[in-house]
Image 1 (cartoon, one colour):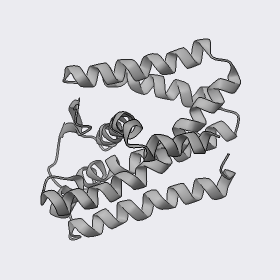
Image 2: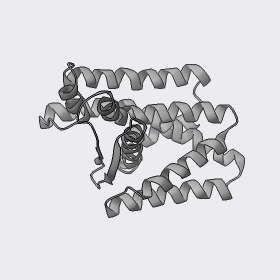
Image 3: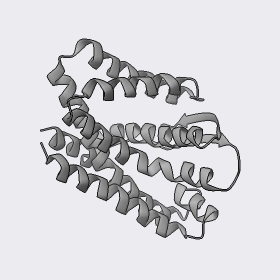
Image 4: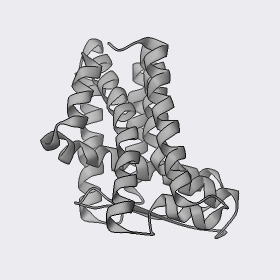
Length: 211
């Protein structure tokens, strides 16, 4: 049931036009978290109405920290989705919910535009409502649906990235940034994103099956 609902949130265009903002939120949170963990200074996060986002950090312009920060965005939804599956299946749904609420609270300090602020506040309020008002079975269902949503959405966004790069001929995507930081060209990084996010989805399916 949770996986089926999550699939609809990804494949139905009207739903995806809204839920895509959640993926962007997690994407930018991934950039931000890895930037901090690698010793970079986090300057700000922006979430835009067209579902794009931007995370700005300062530090060494090259090196492992910058590479990890640039790579984290497209991988973050898959990692979070897989981790959430493990927590919920292990009976630790509150851990997943409180981690999400804490993340939203921390992001408030770094959001630099009004739309981003609205997204973070709305998501944080929804998580808080689940924690303090919803029964355990509803919490489990909501957390599982969100986890499967991220796991299914992650490969889609990497495929969309491929199409976007070919159509727009842009050279500002995460894959292009990584190409400038490493010896691997942008299409190879795009393939890496597709493979790793797809592997995360396959791993989740093999781990717990599709509810």
